[in-house]
Image (cartoon, rainbow over all chains, first blue to last red; front, side):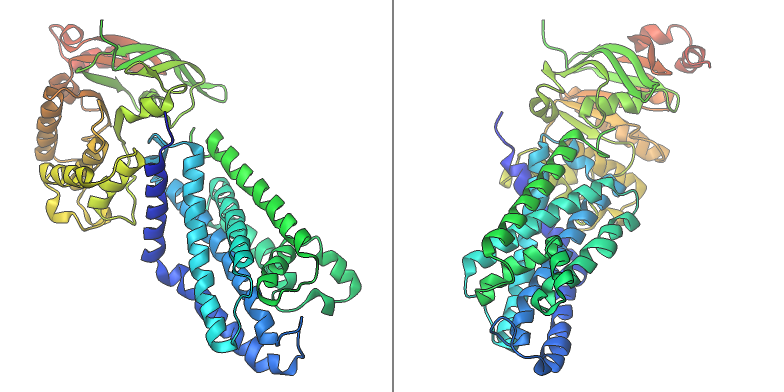
Length: 255
Length: 239
């Protein structure tokens, strides 16, 4: 029997309904936070910092802030939607329907990608208005956002499945995602860091994502684009495979 | 001979070393109204979960209208509608959309689905609440919504897990009337309930499950005989 494309599309639509019914939790916070970062770090403090990678500090900051919000929102929304579905048992509506694990996972992931692109475009617009910067390579801009959104939506599914309470979902955000993103090149080029710390940064996965994305704005980065994108592709494939495998096995879904 | 609506062969479902369902075999014919009775924890809901795919089968087979629920899961799941014991509606959708999105998960969409959703809301007296979320409904309305959702994709088999638990007498009688009407229209129904008079009133045949094993399977008339179902049930399920 053929794939249930209507079921998949229905799940994507349902996730969009959820997103816009909690817009003050999903869409506006990243926009407001970015505005605050731009004003405090970019415009107020940034005037004291010389150019970074050939652009003003505020212009350097924008792509990092977009990645910060894409990572944060895709993970938190992916994980909370799956966990809430398990907690309220509403995910059983999907589990008893003729939908495969792939259709369910891709439904959540595609919704995460759409949400990420929407948030990224809003922040891009802020960058254009307040900092007069825009992507120079829209293809790379889109590819990187899509890959990173797939990666963190998949991780969201994995942790949404494993979590026993909302607190467990916050573990990844609090102890890994936020610290690694902040030291991963959002606010500064790693070339400004001591050599030993620069070497440590190379094993920080967030550094590769931010660096790859920054190429779409500045056409330059701290490492070759191929390496940065390669790392992102490998991590995305691994996270997606984990989400598919766990859903297919019914981990914490089917008893 | 026609293919049965449900055929369970030697079903075993274990959680670790505990067998929640232990060697259950039964057949439900198309058009039948079948009651699955048992005490709390006897294995009724686990059996239902195995039928609809919410529980993985440890051993044995289950087929819905000839489709194995594990090998031909997509075809099998399309034939069955479940009204679960606990409310599990999507809190982000209004109740009309609860029906329309559920149909979507079953691969159905378009004007026909919207019409069917409206028809079911009308039939279950929920039209005036169509734009509200389920949390604003009364207990009885939630039960009716659960039934409407189970019917949205026009399943050939309807499974109702304690559909009248916690509802008042008037609504229970109303639900009985609805279920009779559905069964009369050709739907096969499997019902679990703790209200023995409900099973006696509605079901053509009854299976009684005790500690995961099927301890009785007969027509309601045979099972009750000259006595009443309560005495038979207590006798068979005495610990």
